[in-house]
Image (cartoon, rainbow, N blue to C red):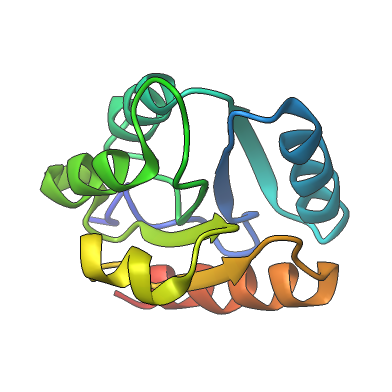
Length: 137
């Protein structure tokens, strides 16, 4: 019997983009969709947790996550994702203007780091690599 949580061959990787700045969400979504990803978006940490934990049969392979957000910060979202059994394959990429050393001191269990402003090639390469890694495990 096939594992329904495994993506179908040729299926597009599911990515969640989270940032409180709508323009940044729009840009990241556009870049990732242009690269072939199935992109979902939100501008709040609370909705990010809800979206990411809602469907354990079809988890996001990658969450691109801002750290500084007004409702729930990205570190708290990441902690919630790591605690969710259905999200154990999900890879977390912080996308922030904050220094990586500072972010790592608050939460070290992330899989990628992209400094704002990010270059489109770096974004696509990072998400591609991590999506492949999520599918392998």
